[in-house]
Length: 108
Image (cartoon, rainbow, N blue to C red; front, side, top):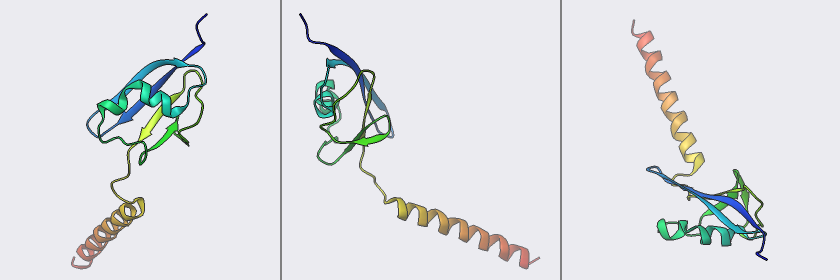
């Protein structure tokens, strides 16, 4: 008799494209083993599980988390910009635009 299996999806996205693989894996497989079995790591050379975070349906999980049927495993890319730096840049841009508009109103 064959061992019970489950179906999971493994996904990884870049700016240019998205990889979404549906895999049939042994029941109780770990998140790490399912990612390896999916073949995504071979396709995406910059993906390194020692530096990338992983999750299931948007919730961060550890690599040893056991999977359940129909789970969507997500491999998250490292951030290219610190979120606080990005927020400060957006705020500075808004403040600068508001100052420009205010100075235009004064000159009328």
